[in-house]
Length: 250
Image 1 (cartoon, rainbow, N blue to C red):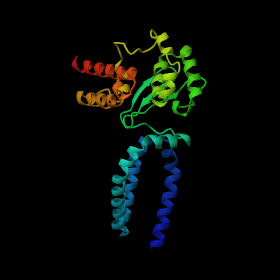
Image 2 (cartoon, rainbow, N blue to C red):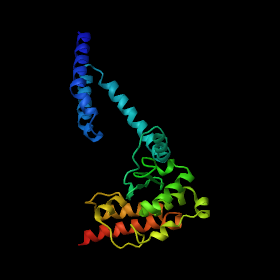
Image 3 (spheres, rainbow, N blue to C red):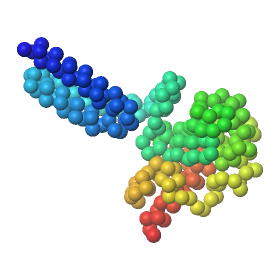
């Protein structure tokens, strides 16, 4: 009897995969949450019916306990894990509430968990590569190209090089942005759009004053010039906070 039950169960699972499973796997991860919850519920019901519920709950409890021990380690080494995944072609997301600044050829992200600045080149000769994957010489080549093709990206590249190659930054010529201060976002700009401010702080459009203040404080703890951060990015973060708070007050 039990053998017949498992044969039927296997047949249902096989048909479900071919009828629905393949389509689900092609959807975005967020679309899979509901089907996965339903699947877990079905498995728990089957476990109760077959008398294996206690064993499954014991396994779940062990996994939860292990997760609580692993989470601090994952958060601590998340930047290194991201770099390892990137080497295998997996573009892992940055930490929660990541700060993003985008230009025509570069999308820079500040990971609030580590304070690390990185960027993905989205146009030009190095398109598809991250700043962290480029050699110092290739960073110089991209920087020189950006001086003509995408001046707003210059300050972002400077911030990255200053963080990753402080000695070379001090000794090299990384001042092209001074010749293009009139182009693109400047540290002294007094205006910023709400969507841009939300991306920079990593908050939703309907964020509360407390959420905005918290995101700003978290980023400034990593970006403040007194702590070796980028003056340009710190100024942009301050402007993003002011922009969103002004909107709430109007």
